[in-house]
Image (cartoon, rainbow, N blue to C red; front, side, top):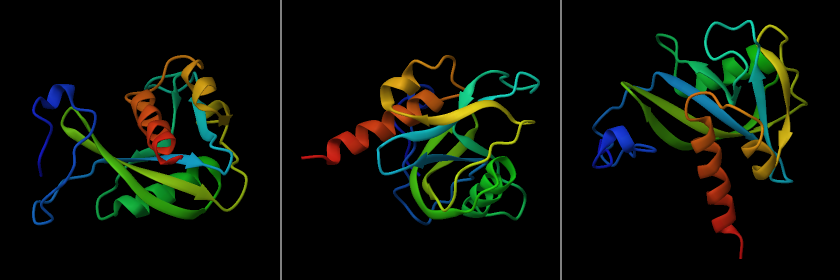
Length: 154
């Protein structure tokens, strides 16, 4: 695994040697639809960690669980949905942890749980940038995603 020269300033880590395992401790989903909007939610104010912060859906990888299995489980638990398509996007270094981020398309309308979220919806790049505080590096993940789709357009 190779990290950017200064890991404290890295946006993401890229595995270049498949023989070098990286330990994925968390996963997150950038949920997308055809109009280039992303689904994000605001954590309930009753949550102990980062209450009221906006985030992409995700959570910790359980022992014996694959990152893909983790994101499918989190989507079912937090939104009551099954993904139609899941694609690896990037791996982000967060201190001692690595968060695997997936691009996800859903089969059905998300139904956020009230215990987890106070508000949720589909947002454009500009709308998402003006929502308020983002959890962890969620703002960077979304910026990277929107930059990537902008670069693909002619």
